[in-house]
Length: 374
Picture 1 (cartoon, rainbow, N blue to C red):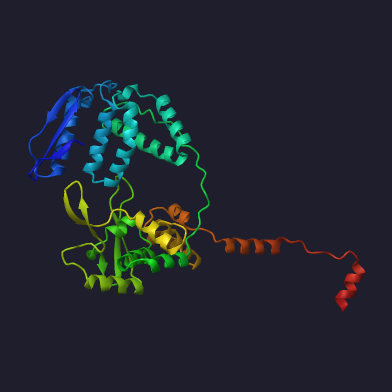
Picture 2: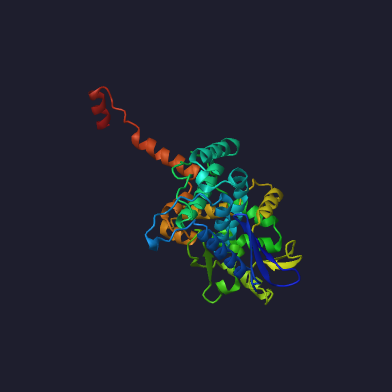
């Protein structure tokens, strides 16, 4: 991204270099206007250089010998910013730094499947199969973006299979451990963790929770999530537990009327050089500190969802209801959250052993008849 703020003014411009030529812009009132204008200008320049072909003229799609990989990656990042996918944008930026060192100045047509495969093999050996698989999916998406917009013709990642991952046994966080962590937390953090425990919500859903999403009369709370890149935000409404109702009612009475969020914080922004008041983005450090203080093994917020879903399943709650509460589109995703208890497994094998054990037959039939008469 080459959009920047004009010093001393609340206005924005863009400035970038493409094909060795610099392109600038007029002044825009908002950052989003400047970003959209920059994206349109990049596509216009690429069209003029022959990277895109007018299909209305009946011409075939030409091989792209001009578009550099760094230009394609910038277009993908612009698209993510335009769609307000900040989390995905940060992921692509983090991984893109490694890609640019290898292929930044290379034309996309020159990047081969062998080069890409060697890179992924190295990531698999040096880091992990899980990390390598994640980069395969993201890099494939970058080239697919170029193919979709008729910028390139070939995706060198296509056909490269993901590495096999050895999954470790997942342990369920017990209610006792969760309660221990909540007990050592401060007043604000106790309320924060109680929302996780009584809603089984995702971190982003809790962080972005607003007072308008809570209906105290009906005792309901509406959660919003968007897990897929190009999907719409889907709401789901679940009832408030008596405990959570009291917590949120108290916070509502003590709230700042100007703040729409249930949980927010004030911090110094290095970028804007001022104090900013916004909802939380990530609170991983909080769980590490609280687990250490409570002297329990570290677990993340997401494991509270797994624990709650498993307890519901053991209590006889139908899997379709658990699926709705967790906000899953697929039943298969919900089944991943349901973990078997070791005691349940032992009991199952105990029943199996009783029914499969052969009955001992008496060898002498005359002895058997005497016993029956007795």
